[in-house]
Image (cartoon, rainbow, N blue to C red; front, side, top):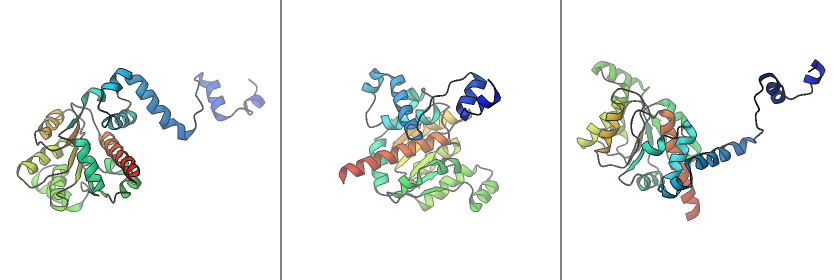
Length: 237
């Protein structure tokens, strides 16, 4: 193709000419909608019909965030987690996260509609100093700080299994009782075990069993729960 003919093409057409890869034109507002339709199609009608309806938006949001369909088998909802989540959000209880990445990924507008604040203490100076003094992780100390400041909250863990382990200890000692625990740490050391442990609290838990998870999945679960609460609030109004 001659140079003057190339100038008449838009950037997408030029890229396709150069690479041989075809890109579909999709309006930005339609991308998420089409993505969810694709996820549902790949999950299949039989699975969708059998999966608990109230939990499905959370699973869909996690798969949308990760493009990982294995969560259909590993995502666990224990001890009335969905109802506990809705009640906590309606009451305006804060969401505490173990990483700034998880905190930044939570939709602040959706949270603000319920007076919900999002906190992460892992970078606080007092947490850093205490963790260094005791030789423990900042995530563990952050859980202790949350127990002092917000004994009722949604606690979302997306990175550190030590946060879940410390949460379990604080709960067992009667020092902490979160309204909901979201257990999504990722990794290879004590990760699967920490998730199994937190289920033993008997408290409402949403967890991705096994090694997979991450701050993005923890934020995805929070956003799904906020959206569900928002939809319920609109229906009631």
